[in-house]
Image (cartoon, rainbow, N blue to C red; front, side):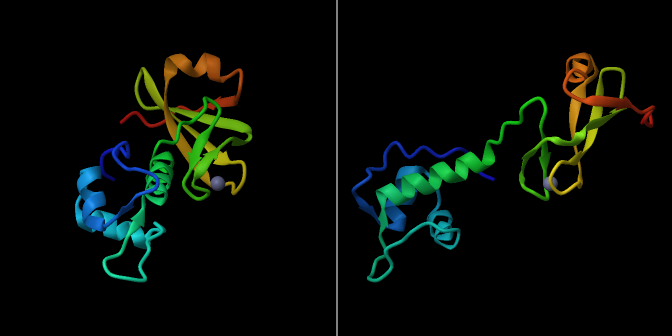
Length: 141
Ligand SMILES: [Zn+2]
C-alpha cells in the first residue's frame, strides 16, 4: 500500500483526465487508471476518459478510511470479517512472548475464527476489566 494521498488540489466540479489526476495527486498514471477497476467512477463514453473531481475525492477518502482502522481496546481485527470485532464471549488468552510483551488470542464474535493482537503485559490489568483473560504459559522463544 502506498502513501497517503491528499486530494486538496482536486476541485469537486472539474473533470480530470487520468494524467491530470495523477499529476495533482502525485501518483503514477497507472495507479489512477487501476482505480477504475477498483470502483472509481470514470466517464468513459468518449476519449479521453474523464474523472469527475467529486468522484475522485470520494474514492480516495474511502480508500484511506479502509486503511486506517483503529481498534478499540476491546476489539480485535478479524481477517475473515475484515472488520474490528469483539472477542467471542469476551474470552481472551494471553500468551507471553517475553517479560513485557505478549499476544492476546481470541475468537471473533461473529465468525468464531481466531484473531490476535499484541499487547503489553503492563496493560493486562486494565484489559482484565473488559475481558476474561486466561493466562497461558506460552513458549519462550
Ligand atoms: Zn470474524
